[in-house]
Length: 191
Image 1: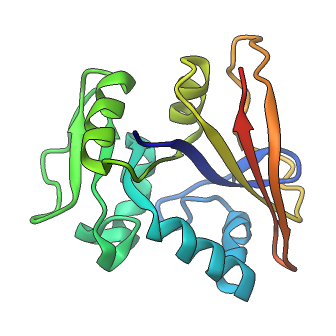
Image 2 (image 1 turned 60 degrees about the horizontal axis):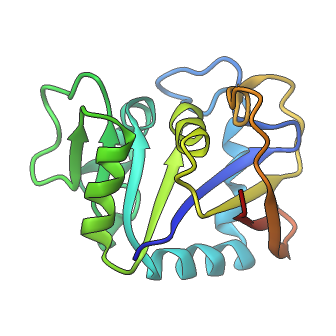
């Protein structure tokens, strides 16, 4: 059975993007620093470990649209080509040829069923955006949350934990790994 993990970078004030997003800067002005951890030694090792056990990815349509220019047909895992299930109401008319993408129009439960079938015993990563993460949390479909906490206050942008309908979700801290670019926090969802 797959483990479902939200794995996402966030600012200290709770944003996964900065304000003023554009197609050229999908993370907003200054938002790219949320991912600086990927380039340091600790972050590179954590990313390699996560990818080694990754069976499938779930993303929302906004994440797909804003990331496709960088991901291309191979998706966020590059040459590993893990399948990506994009939750959307309206599939794109021109997805990349030979891409790893499956467009799911019948909800998050269907996306999870398809992703877990593809992943087998490996991890299913819910990688964003905020809305898809919130939907999975509210539905109780998340086993763990991995936060890459960047040492920056963005002052605005897209908040990760905004729309949980007042629901309290209990977490157990599993691991903390520090680097100069981020503090990496792993939680198990207990409720």
